[in-house]
Length: 288
Image (cartoon, rainbow, N blue to C red; front, side):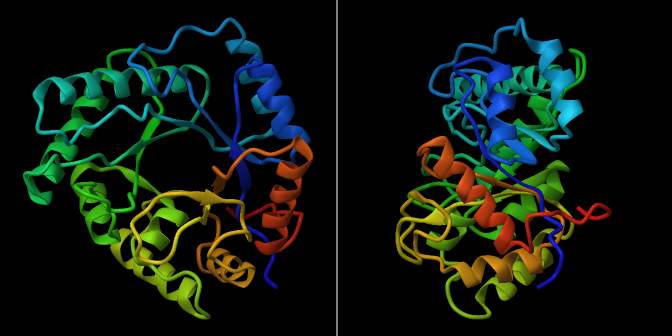
């Protein structure tokens, strides 16, 4: 088995304060992590954090990288409704600034939905919205980098294919986050022997070096179902051997799990398991 080059982490709660978040990340063996910087189900902007400086200092001491935020679920930059697009651009800009202010590197945003008037128009609006959000964020200090996430392709959702994701990446000048559960239920077969290597090759062909992050989730639902749902790694539709093959084909790409919370001990065990599947508990120091 090759040495591990992929950093491993997971989405973590912030309800007990940012210090507690970092403590939990350390206890679970994370090397990277993801948080929300505001309520993902409301339009309210992020509020300044009193523990900001201590969080940045401790994050640097512990060597967590990249630090990731997930944008609000309400954001839809591709909407046919002007007001929703404007709210979305302003909300994303505020989260880019807030994440950067916390020393985080990336903000993951969903590609959104074209609302029924076609993929081409939706992609145009998505690209415009990403550019607008970055322009708005650029006026206020250091902003984090926005990355666009693939969808399951249900209904009018955009970017369920790597080709569409690659088009957005090229036109908007952004990188992407690939959710493995989304890819699987959108039709990319990670479960068969040799499948992960072929999927990774297709991903590289469509996106080159623009893959910033994997949302590492096992799929609750079957191949091609276009139904979202996450399971812990090794407990869903994708067998353990497939993960090892995928990691070997995508060296150096950070892995952040969004799998269901259990006990801290069970979550730590999942982090250890993913590290082992990716090549071992110790990461190669000069790669990734």
